[in-house]
Amino acid sequence: MKICQVCSVDFTLRHFIWPLMRRLREEGHDVTGVCAHGPLIEDIAADGFRIHDVPIRRTANLFWNWPAYTELVRLFREERFDMVHVHTPVAGVLGRAAAARAKVPRIVYTAHGFFFHEHMPPMRRAAHVGLEWMMGRTTHTLFTQSAEDASTARRLGLCRTGDVLAIGNGSDPAVFLPDEDNATRTRIRASLGTPMTRPVIIMVGRRVAEKGYPELIEAMRQVDAELWAVGQRLESDHASSVERLVDAAGNDPVLKNRVRFLGYRDDIPDLLRAGDIFTLPSHREGMPRSIIEAMLTGLPVVATDIRGSREEVVDETTGLLVPVRDSDALARALNQLVQNKEQRERMGQAALMRARELYDERLVLHRQIDHLALRQQSAS
Image 1 (cartoon, helix red, strand yellow):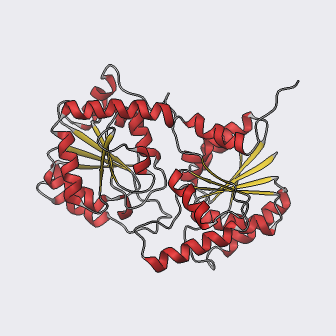
Image 2 (cartoon, helix red, strand yellow):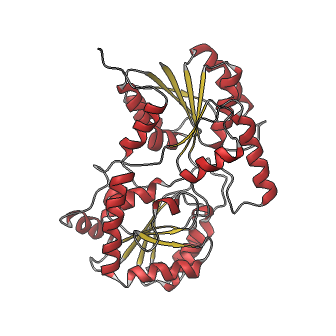
Image 3 (cartoon, one colour):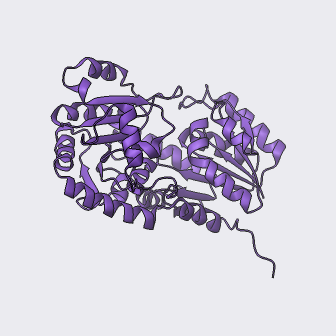
């Protein structure tokens, strides 16, 4: 089959969709990628994939995305794809609308986390649900990552065929794995000037408010540990900035010795192996891969009690769940693990076992390929 994978930005294509593209190619399919131009496209192109640069903007303003829509229609008509598979909210709307207009035979949407969520104001939530329902009239198959989203999709009728499947999320256990001999821990901590005995909390996520940075920075006033905050704000981000908080933390007499903003890093597996606790205090998520990667590394997780995260983290077993936007509760949970090495090691081991059983990336890829009947049949 001739298959097109569509998302908004190169970051998503590189970090989340590339493994699926490779797996589909292994099954003999012709796979093309589409996203807005960015430097991370180069890795995928070098792997032998055709990548089309379409100027998709991460905004709900349809006027600004009209050029992207018309370009997608033209591309789909010209290429005559058998299947268009769309990802992320904006590309999910534009891609499905364009694929329907171009009469693509099969349209698949993976909701990595519906934009609407339980903490959104009711009127705004209703508007986004309505948009998802309308686009669902064009959708033949709807994948969600969390089981909670799949249940919501079925209840609200967000796929006209009713073909809804929770595929989960995962990462590569051969890349994210524990540091058995402490060699990586020693090297990374030495490079960052962090003592071996200093408790280290790691956060990996885009540097925007909805990832929980305001609450986490405030919580660290009460936590005697070192925080490594990994990630940066994307150029395409419209979410609220936290740069003022970052600057203020650097000048705060307490926080400047506890909070370190490491920016974008390509050695996240090593950073996780050098840490003790992982945290993700997001306001909303789909089914975060960063938590899975931390669990595969053997770290306990402190996360907010939201969709996706509460499916991954078993409270009081593999980590701790706290309310959204509650810096005091977050501080108490972090302190509980900072002050109890035995508990965090026990939870980390439980997290590792759970992640290996449920969140191996190969399982997620197999579910999609099997459900879409894209597996190459052996000759009889």
